[in-house]
Image 1 (cartoon, rainbow, N blue to C red):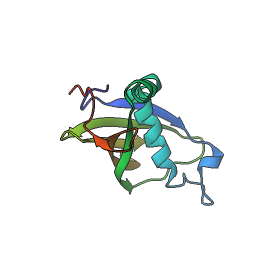
Image 2: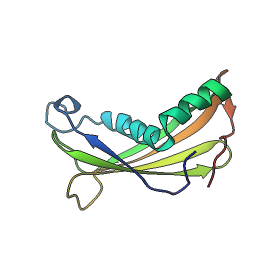
Image 3: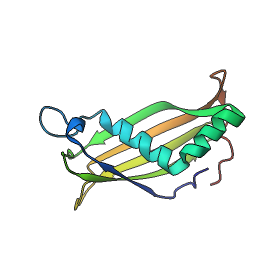
Length: 130
């Protein structure tokens, strides 16, 4: 499992099809980038193992995002992510999107995850190591 408060970096290359008619990244795509960053931090193999062996998976409970600067075609974004456990049932993932040479975050987001079992019932976060 991930370490609480450790900053994980994930690079996202922006392709033409990531952008909208104005030439900037379409806002909803940041949710995908955040998902990829979390998956990278936790590890695909661990997520598959959790589901296959323990019947546990993470789902999004709540999302907040703030946009300050749009990314454009050709950017290589640095998604900086860290998580903080909030009680036995929630993980808050904090995400910052940095553009190349940026002096401030382009986009920030907080994604609140909960853990469910195969019956889609809420269960405590497993094996969390703060």
